[in-house]
Length: 272
Image (cartoon, rainbow, N blue to C red; front, side, top):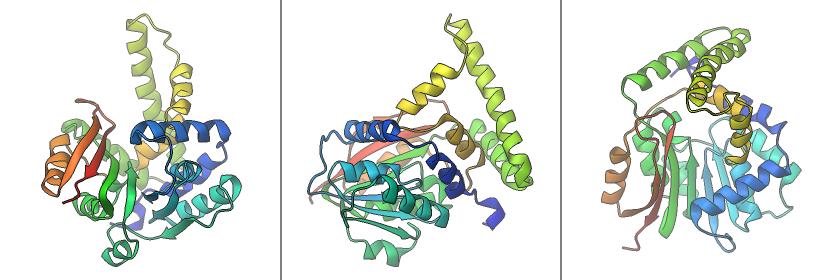
């Protein structure tokens, strides 16, 4: 894949960092507690594969974990380091590295973790199945493997792939307008659907809800979604069955049905 075909995830995260505040961080901490079913991560090792902004590495640190953060994108690494300096504790138990989940030497050097977390990342590697296996292998026995993977919509996913390729092919100064156009079309569809259900059609309430959903930003999510290449998708059974064969137990799953977005998975690794 050429440089032009790979979305600048880190630059988008650097823009998001300007909006980050304690309220968003608290939402991230709460959502991580809810996802893991744990109130604290004291004494546990948390591996964030594709750490992006570093927000959930920070959340894990605030819950008491020893944290190792990895990202392929050098801008994401810099963003995570800045976030750690601004909002993290002075504890040395948060290590940030540049590297790829597809690099077997790097992955082996990381050791294993009680929680391996890769949220909306492994489908952007260009080799999703290999990335999932490499990430899963870093999970300790009785540990948790948590990830979110784009849902396979069939024709819908192929349309989104074309949208993403257009974003990455056009001049950088046009990309803002492409995001505005595509997001505007979908936001209008969402507004019409709300109006039909006799709800307030304006998007502001839903955009505010996004802030409370893992502390994220609706605009930066749109940029990530419209530009994000590489791009792969999978139906839930193509995620669950291979991991079961590797000794993982599905503890929790949240799917989007036939819609677009990510299916979310939490697996535990058997002790055998």
